[in-house]
Length: 377
Ligand SMILES: *Cc1c(COP(=O)(O)O)cnc(C)c1O
Image (tube, rainbow, N blue to C red; front, top):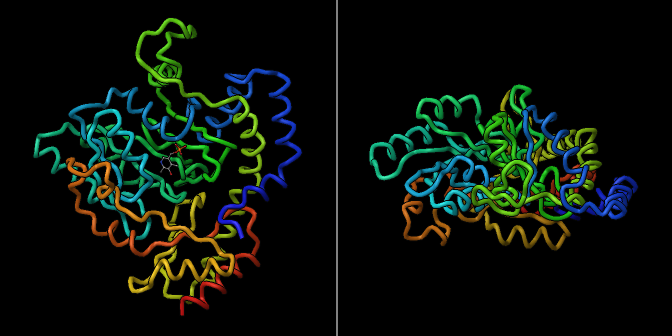
């Protein structure tokens, strides 16, 4: 069994994807071809924001957003302690100090109460200037956007939504990647909407920031002239090939894949209901795009042993994530290493992600659950 079956997806979408790739090869417009602009327009419309600017990957997307805001040395950026490394790496990379905040034990997303407390602490210490909050829509579930935007407003902070795992999710009908002052996503192959290599996108309603972001993506160009460079930028674009591949994949995502992963999650929920596991909970008003289906094991279960047993039955599982951000070696000896995050510490010992993708059948879910129950008891 595959953890995320990209081969099966290709089999289903092969005719459209092959045609899209061939068209790019014949056009030879490998950079900034028409498919890139077409994809940007479609993504912006779907998400419900004015501007979508595609770029090289989800990590660049975060860095470019921070660069557009001029965030750097002396600035504090608040980041959940339970996330993929890039969420904290990018603010540190532009010279700011990521301050890690604990997460909610049921949603896995940043805890608004602890966020506010942490902001006040940093404010009182007066060592760093609080500038921005990075929310992560972890495992496909939007962060708590009922509570977080008012906190940002109260303290005058910018909100950067890291929607790398969240694309397709929503809250009260408003789609992920529309909640931040700037929002970002990733098209890494295993993300909810993935391409066949690296890719990313940046979303905003703000015209000025959008222009700035387009400039930063292409060596700090002025307007349309790539050889008139008015600021330092980078080279971060989505290849035409990747845009062409994403167009039919995006249609499938909208038409059936997003519904399919929600169906798979429902089957898991039903079939695992009578176990000791803590199952993912999606609160009223939220829709997840199920980048991962992650359960919590009791503390006394030996993770590695369980994973090995499942592996012998051809059931792949993953641990997202093993280490709290503030304990990553890259932050050792910095102020980012000082964080009080007991929930994240516990989750890193108890979480397990099960196979999840839109081409899983009820029978496959049954196989995972049967193997799980057998080795778990
Ligand atoms: C994958 C991921 C990123 C980075 O995206 P890449 O396209 O791999 O650079 C950033 N944040 C989160 C939460 C992610 O899961």
